[in-house]
Amino acid sequence: MTIKAFIKDVVEVGKYGDRVSVLWTHGHAPTIHMQDDKGTNVESVVLTSEWTVDQVKEYLSERGFDPIKQEKSEL
Image (cartoon, rainbow, N blue to C red):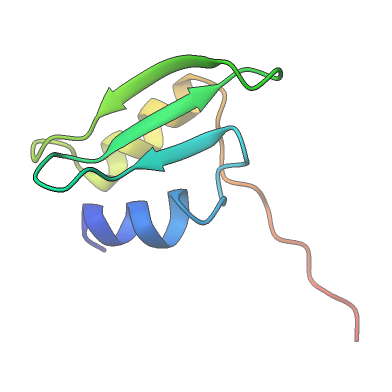
């Protein structure tokens, strides 16, 4: 998975929770914003081309943002 696909398909859609968001600005690298429980921005990181998917996962995990586990829906 490319870094762009990971950001769009995993991070941006909320799989790391609603306190992690992505800002896309035309002509600039995407920025990940992390918020506290009150919704205040506490940290931001610009994802330049040097970042890899594993680095983003590790970065978020080190800050307490792990992927939300999906529960199987009962049919």
